[in-house]
Amino acid sequence: MSGGGSIGSGGGGGGDKFSGGGSSSTKTPSDFLKSIRGRPVVVKLNSGVDYRGILACLDGYMNIAMEQTEEYVNGQLKNKYGDAFIRGNNVLYISTSKRTLGDGA
Amino acid sequence: MSSNPSQLLPSELIDRCIGSKIWVIMKGDKELVGTLRGFDVYVNMVLEDVTEYEITAEGRRVTKLDQILLNGNNIAILVPGGSPDPE
Image (cartoon, rainbow over all chains, first blue to last red):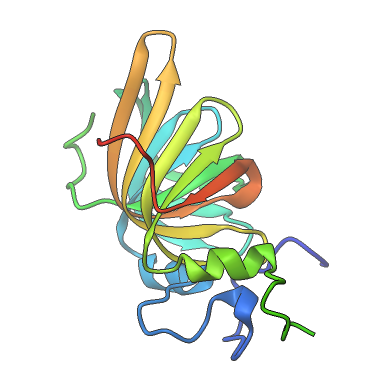
């Protein structure tokens, strides 16, 4: 297990300029991952497909487990999954969503 | 080592952008503009109040996003200060 999974394994990094630590408004990728577990999210893959659902669990590789997942292709609902696992290499971004589920498009 | 003010590491330049607008140009026809909150050694980035632009054959699709963790894998160019585009 070497390389790759740095996001979750950050552990503060005090004084390290590269980690962007210090300022109170700073939120590193590892801070973000800690803050969004259990929240409704939108996950966009490199292919352009969107997955909306409740984020059950994730790691530093951006591997993601989601619940109540809805699959959107070109903004249109194509599929629903009770549980879904997304391998991290496909993930373009993970976004918090203010909108409630089923609100779609 | 880094005491010479004429030397600025790329990562230090991005660090100076934290809290301000930044324009992210991805590999492929995608761009994002948002406020930079943080980043890591892979230049994965946390962005806030994001506008995503996807350039497709049908035209430009715009998506507004609250807060995102952007995978650094497909990032090509970072421009401090945001997009010159008024939108």
